[in-house]
Length: 130
Length: 139
Image 1 (cartoon, rainbow over the protein chains, first blue to last red):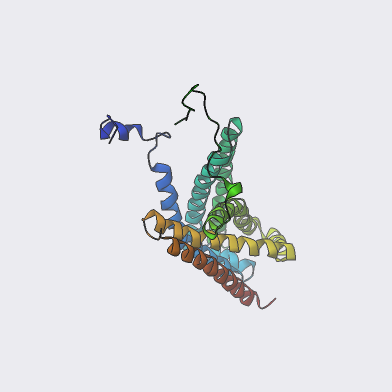
Image 2: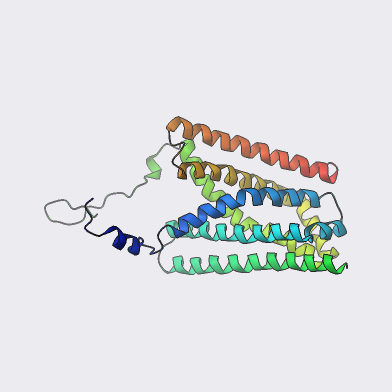
């Protein structure tokens, strides 16, 4: 070990991003969570193909199904934003990098929000029986 | 570390690794870049999922419009590519998780798991489309 720094000082530095393993770790956690969530989402979409519009409202608007979809959207967009960040950091440099990074985070939050609000609207619609 | 030529102390401009232009494409490296490409494509493709939910929330007319959009031949083609990208990224992602756990780095294993990821991804893609077509009652 050529470093003269104590392990604590090194850990406190937490690398060039000053975040340590956080980004890497969250990417893996969201990846693992995505395995059952993708399977569930595909199952829901396939079930929706068997029925008409009222049936789809009944399916997607069921609180359990809606909850799974909201969880899936949140996890999916978190994972996508982390992944796109790595790709941008690898290939884009200078001012364009920062603009793209901000654009990716903002659009991920915006698009995820549209999806989550849509699911909530469907849940409310089903509950109100319209 | 910057390297110098040892005499004048000036920087030697050496080509940066990886030298993609002189490498023979290998299965493992091609699958690696395909993982990224699929990931970026899927990030854009998430719009499909959100459009689906948005259309359901918007009412019967928007829902019918969404169905017409997805059942057109171009819509089906895009969805088919989307499905394959999803399953490839999923299968290869599981391969990555094994690597993260320190397993499967042997050359033979890395190639075999790559082939397996492709085969399973193709099988899952056709499996899901078979289920989708039987759900809507044929082509």
